[in-house]
Image 1 (cartoon, rainbow, N blue to C red):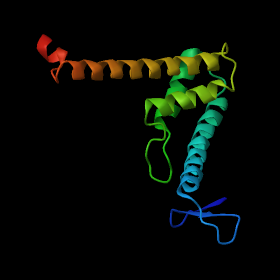
Image 2: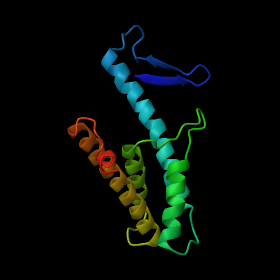
Image 3: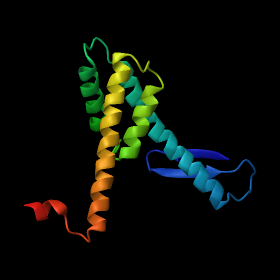
Length: 145
């Protein structure tokens, strides 16, 4: 099966290798999801390349500051939206970056620091949401005030 993308009209075209063959819905979904994954992977690769281009930084803190700015500031040029808007996307991008660096280097420790922060924020958000659901919508902080 062949996938092509019409970038001017933002349309996907699917065709089979046989002339009058019908392309099943399952094949279409699989083909389009792989195309979207490739786009997401290109952003991850850009993120990793940006991290690998960081040099001459003197501390783990400087690395983690630059890495977090890259992670939270990266936008899709097509629509201006943040690329890594969910915790899952952020963690995946950071884990991809970790594959290319020595974990014991300052850069590796900087990536780990940002990954730890993202994981902690995700955990705290999950706990907060669970507390609200279990409390029947009453927020504990309001009672303490």
